[in-house]
Length: 384
View 1 (cartoon, rainbow, N blue to C red):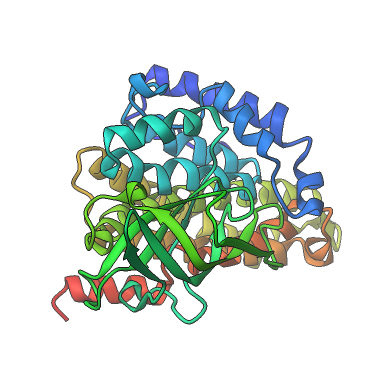
View 2: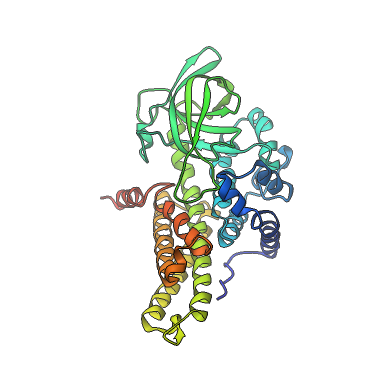
């Protein structure tokens, strides 16, 4: 089964796609199982990605980047990594490019950008974002990590959890409370690796995405320079909400690519695996299951492409981003589950890619905002 080429891509985008595919084949696929066992991606992956131009697309040329603010390049990278079954690497590089970098390009001062952006492009500086707290899930207004101004520093106390790239990160964009107002009291600080009082906790033991370092972070009287404040104090909540639409589109792009991949592998499997003297794909129930999934994947792919076009023209709304995120992530979970079932007992074996796809998929309906939160956003947009 061949996946249709997305609409709206120019020859230079397809040339970039070939670069990404070569990078994945040479730098990721041969080592991915080793990284899964290690429980963490090597820093050298980011540096290798930077060497071939896979990081910091929107970074201006004066700071070492290509200065190309075109999310189609991000989408191609997200797609090809997920299509290759490299979900852990996809998350890590997506956090770098799609999730955290926009805060630096849109909020950082020229002086801050000179300090931070060149390393982001080369992969020598790894990014993370710390929003979720042990007692706070998707409710940003409930963030309690405090930052108290003390001369030229903020003194930060609190804890964060589920931080992707948490072990590797050199810069952590951290949501902190600088005032009592649930929304206007939030600010963003960039916490650097060697900040006094900043501690990394354990690399969390997850059921999937084993190679993706997801961590707990702690701040005990951590002294963060005022010079590391992103934007104006008290504007953090609005910056987070504004950037979440791109993050959710990125997750949707990856979800559809991952679902396409596991579906294609399963289609090949059911054509060759036999039972009762015939290919298992020829049984009506299995044919109908695959026909339904193929149809839903076409719908999802079209939906994502439409949202991508809106995003490129700055018209993607938070509500529409929530729709595409929950729909595609739930579809990926369903596709992975049905495809594992069609593999029978072999689908439960780690040597089959469908088993990893199944456990890697499960987080998709949770991170970036749970399906339930996405539906709340959509409901409020409907005036309900």
